[in-house]
Amino acid sequence: MVAFFVDWQFNGEQDEYLDPVRSQYREFFVLVDARYRDRPVSWCPYIYVDNHHALARGWIQGFPKKAGNVHQTRVFASPGKASPRLAPGARFGATVSSDERTLAEARVTLEAPMEDPTPLLARDTINLRHFPTLEPGKYDKPAVHELVRMDYADQQVADVWTGTSEITLFPAVGEELADLAPVRPGMGFRASMSYNVTQVEPLG
Image (cartoon, rainbow, N blue to C red; front, top):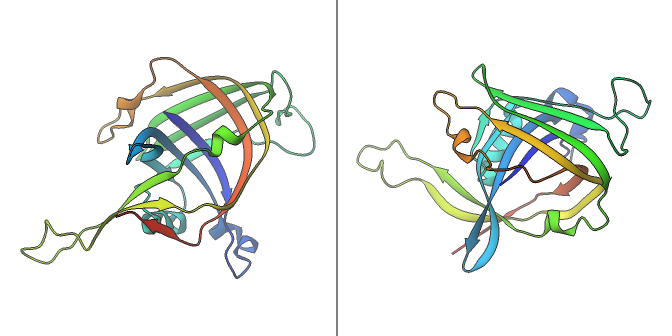
């Protein structure tokens, strides 16, 4: 399992980034190892976001997004006690909650730059687009039910650092995230990333 805390800024064709209240949002999600036709892929079982525009956009793409509150340590150009530098020993923290219940807390301590970040982008992400129907007699026949592959165009990563990690997934009423609690922590990382999404590929 890989857990991501992300501070996003969205943009489309109308300079949406100039309207931060709509274009900025924070997100937490996990990816688990899966296989599609004997090919290793990633599957997103849980994802939380704090912006309803991103929530709706995610459903269209097949992400099972839920409303949540996500916070993480930020880096600023001006150094100070409140902003860690990208350097050995720098520490970052993050939390996610939903319905006023804390679901996860994480810490990462940087050790060194990652020379080859290719493994972070190596696997396709497969989602399930699912939209049920409320037509009587057809509840078991959803309007949309299809596997899709996310098409990440112009995907780039920068300032990738790796280090040690700690993460705790807390049990909460109505949530199953804690069932994925790791047996032991793995590599932690901090990076900047960008990509474009203009389509998803249906998988037959």
